[in-house]
Image (cartoon, rainbow, N blue to C red):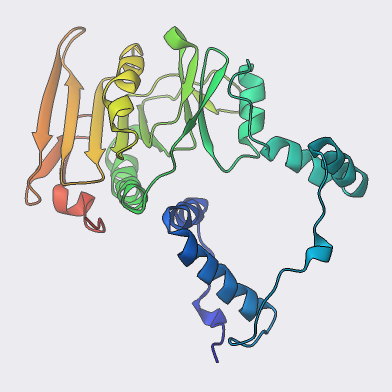
Length: 275
């Protein structure tokens, strides 16, 4: 007989919780069902060998509009959450305010460009652990040794040339951060941007996204970290037209980040990665 060990639970950060969600999304359906079955048995004190069956009396079929009315009549706050969490119609045109309102109730990540929304792929286990470790080490260094401020992947960066809002994995602003809005959700002047590349995002991170970032006058350094192998590429802007590129694939080597004036060991970047 299994028993739930409540001493193993702890309060965690939103980023850790987000990593946990993305971990389970990447697991096979059979594994997720086994985990859900185990938690259900623990929550309702059901014996491990007891047979479970679906209680169909709790389910009903109906049109989406009827469901919304049913939710609204019972709980207005729940109705608002239901509406905001619904997937957007990617073929329709949205204003920036509509986009950010939608994001408040969404577990998925989207980017905005000229009224259109694009859903971004969720991070893998390696992607999330590498990003978290970089945030801790570089964020701490920036606070203690530079005049640069760190922002995580929930911070939108506005690209005026494309009328686009994108969400870099890590963002650093040196000097005073400038925003398009009073809520400080739409950053205008990033200096250093870091992307942890996955198989699905590598092409976009290297090309389309990089070209968008280059249009920002404040942007001067770009670091691409591969989540599938030991590889880090950095690009540093020496003048208006010249970018210096450096590559490191040696786990015993290090990556120099100009903006923060730090040599970051590859072993520290990939210390929890599992290839």
